[in-house]
Image (cartoon, rainbow over all chains, first blue to last red; front, side, top):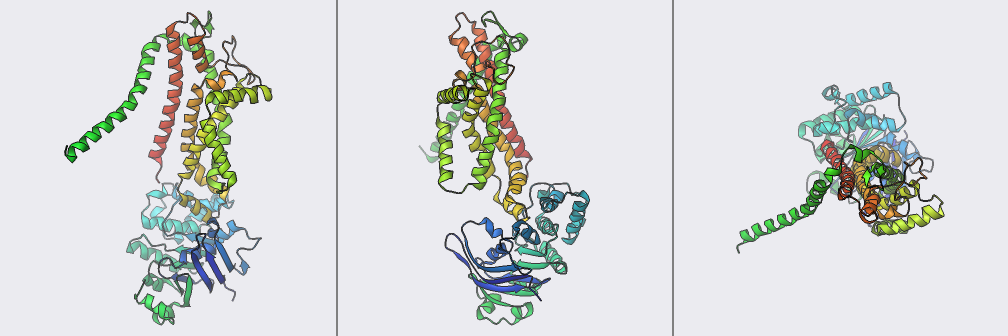
Length: 252
Length: 281
């Protein structure tokens, strides 16, 4: 089967000379939850931002290697980068609703893509909120400010905002970083339901969370991918000594 | 002196200096009101001048100032905002950008009489607009631009970076992002700068001296190629060029001019305060 996303020998160096990624290769299959974990500053976020070319916003960085999405190079000349970001959508570590109503946050992506039909937009709003397990909490106040939501609700709104674009892949960069345990478990449960329809690549909050949600996982350290394996093998029988040390808490 | 006493003394001194700033403003306002309020009545505000401007009203000058202020806005607003967007969102740190920034800083430092002479040379003579509202508004517009560009750029930069990142992560183009996520939030700040720039333009004499202002015109302007009277120049004329001009008319004219610029300034402050209160980020 063709990989959903294939990453082949990529290197990424920031303008200040910081080598964020070194020779990384792995595939992500459709409808799996792929977790990228490792200590801070190991390159996980940099890698996520490359996958939908949000990295374009960072000036003067040096990128080498190939990333394909459904078999075609995402840096290819004919690629519509805006469409790519709708197909591969990012949820950030800090929940960042745009100023405005709950509804306007959800319709923003589709509207920027040119969808004007109110019926379609309403449907997207409801459907995405339901998938993000937020519909019941906000259905009566869709037109009130998104800023008034709690932290956990904001993060699920951001998830819904990504889903409203009907993407194929969702990138989650530590989506539960600022959340309490209850909100965290709601988000994790939501992710489990979402894998039926989406491919999910996630940077987790902790090794424990990685183990809870991953189908497969990759361990990153200092810009290198140390090991990729099925979740069970990764977290119970890691092959690499450094992976084992990190998982068992000997460093990091 | 103990440390506490030093501290107390310092606070008193600093407060006193801060209050001092306030005093000239209040003095000017109260003095003008006290001396000029007697001249102000309906006729003064709405009638044409009569008897060598020693009687009647100053309506043509008020109208001229309002027209010129409006014209200044039309000239400087679009260019300034587009320039600010370019500088804040698109400009890379290269020679072109540095040249533009240097030009803006220098424009801001040019004395207003030089703008007046420039307007005379460029718009009145070279462009052939003659002494006209068009030439005056262009001159005032250019004079206003540096202030408006700087405040607009600041307002644009004050919009949190994350809104831009989020917007683009949702598939918006850079322009869509600016249009939908940056400008709406920067607009109040841009307007504030614009209004402050206009209040300065409304009160300037030198730039309009050679480009538009008329000593006395018996009729109101009917097109942008006409001359017009304007309050600052009118004030200058009746204070220095007309013998036997009643003092009350001079103070009344000054008071009207002050009220116009003061209203604009207060409006700017009001816009800023109300927006700050309403926004939730």
